[in-house]
Length: 327
Image (cartoon, rainbow, N blue to C red; front, side, top):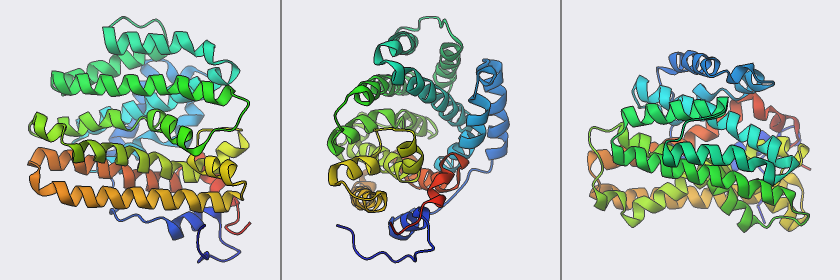
């Protein structure tokens, strides 16, 4: 169990997270953030997504361009815009899937099948969301090499499949174990589709030996897990109130039948171990990597620190500051 809290009874759950989470990566933001924010607003309007109920408010509360800026501080303005578009799209798609899937997982099938058809087969879209995805896919193909774009599409399809797993898990009457929760969360995180974009931001493609190096592959998995689990810490209050299941801290709370504060600390311990492993592997494999490989791994590290700083500041998760640190 966690040790003694170094916070006071006047502290919040957000303070508790800040006090115990080990975040060794420096905070940084992209200088083109304001341009990306304007670009996101125009892009969502172009495809009619902000005309749909609740989307404009959700975007204002999630700030996708800020998340893009924090996770991708070193990329050029063009790549930052693609990253911001993708984050905004995933926020809209994820919220829609959550709403539909809560009523019945089967209702999600047409929505998910359209996405797979666009990503895998290049089929024309039939909905606003599909049209936005097709345009995003076009942007990726124009910026990336064919191999990088194929990796992006593959990872994006994994994300789409993960949303069906999430809907099925939410519909079950029995509590989800932490291991099952983290397995589903690794898919629905939607972090790994961004990794090919960081390769594309470099001067050259990675060699197959670098790309498939076991340590580099493991770094990708650790990056996605650490990033999304950190967001879970700050979103736990919101998601607990909404009856959500797929959250690392809430999974610990169910498993140990403990307070949310203790569950958050258990989740923090797992995240800290994950970040420590990421640092060890990054240091070990670094001397073997080309400049492109180093930039690719730096992009992975950016998601860990970026998700932390964005999650603690974004209005969507502000409820975390209203819960005391001490039960």
